[in-house]
Length: 539
Image 1 (cartoon, rainbow, N blue to C red):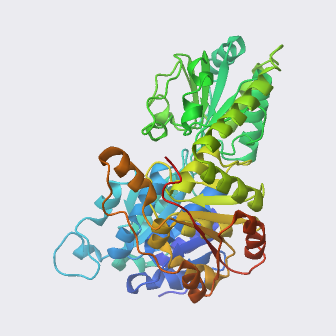
Image 2 (image 1 turned 90 degrees about the horizontal axis):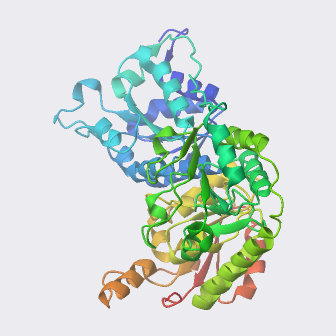
Image 3 (image 1 turned 120 degrees about the vertical axis):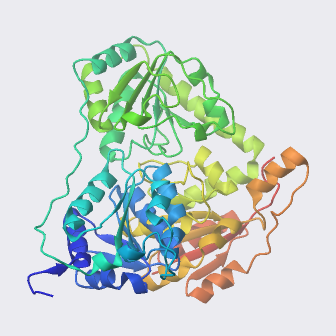
């Protein structure tokens, strides 16, 4: 190869590093040797070797969810790519930015049945069925344009995973393409002369306005504007699960999370005359278990992605644009509402009453959540699986900042929390990170403890152990009066953690939690804390 030319693999890694990629996750394979050799020559990108490609995908998700910046997921084609498919589907469902770079069999073998290693009949089609943007680099001169396009589309809006595959015969070809900057997609400006003026007037004249905040409130700047807007309007704020932290949990105008039945069915939403929905699709997932979400006909919807505005509820005013910008301009147009200061104690009282009601229904769960929250402190990032404790955490766990509650909401896979915690810690190395997982979901990805030990990644993993798939068992009992397939025979999780080289503890009393958390966050590596719970904690 000419000294003036570099391979497509090297060009790709140089391009992604130039675009801002600092982290890659994956497992090297025979078909990805060129990509890994390219990483070895590029010190800008750190690579972490996972133990399963699905875990690598969740790590990439955790990194992106915590930082707001895409990371790279590297896989071989065939089993490597399909192993990562669940994580990519989850990232798409929750609008998480990342670039999945996969190899592909040589061009002449694509779609044939000639028996080439790792061949899939239509690998590109598999990913086209899951993400909006999936591409194949078929020629050397497509390398940098496709890399730039993938990075720009991952950043969004709205920010989603992009799949990019490279056939082996293209991957190692020499390339002399000039460098290409990512063609960043500009954010969509709001029509400040039209809809935003009408939106401001509608909010200003409303008797009972309310703000419904989602995961699009994903920065301190956006959170600050949202909080200021709520204070000007004296409007209560409901957050979605992904929007937890959009306003501090203890703010006097924070009502709670819309996934909690007591919040979503409260008079605040039922009697509101105007709702400002920000950074949310008002997802069906929010109310699929607890009945229809009832909103007034006067609905103002602000989001950077025009395709989700009005997708679930009729909208009165569409505001398409970057949410921070939209909130800032609304603030400029609104005046302080007089005689509304009495709203603060009403909202605070409602939130406290909601928590009391939850304690009456499930005292052991709420006691445990409150003890865990107190031990972890206010600045912790938590990652979650769909276990009983995490669902209740979605309802009631206090979150004070955006990007601090990472929950696989729409797609709902298991095995997310541990690898996502690893990715989140790499994105935010100076903040404490704790994973909440059940015994069943932990068994999906516990091998990633090996990754955390090897990389000396300080994450705390709570394993809430009820020796069954508890959430499913409760639904079975409710619907059919019996259970089947939900009981689990578990290993000794403490001994298992220690066998990996991690710390392992068992907590039988919440009074132990402060000491165990201190030990975890002073240890150079992962810590597993098993907490036995009872299957009948929730009625």
